[in-house]
Length: 62
Image 1 (tube, rainbow, N blue to C red):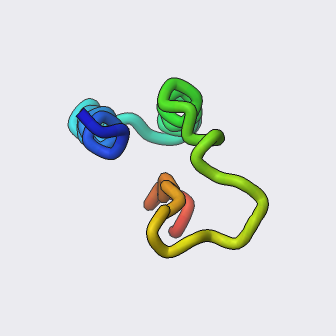
Image 2 (image 1 turned 90 degrees about the vertical axis):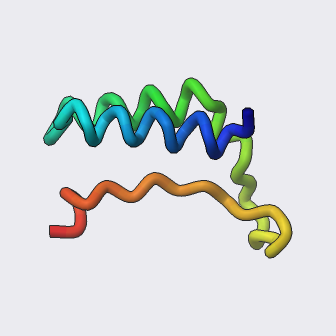
């Protein structure tokens, strides 16, 4: 299973469980840390063959 599949599964669970606000934010931090997503990003320009994962929360876009 790839990290993307595992992350997608956990994000879908958050959506189904109806997390919002601070709870949602805390759960997203846990997912980010659990899957070592910080290691997938470096300070150089992104290379097109290696996409950088981002979690976008729709509550933040309102």
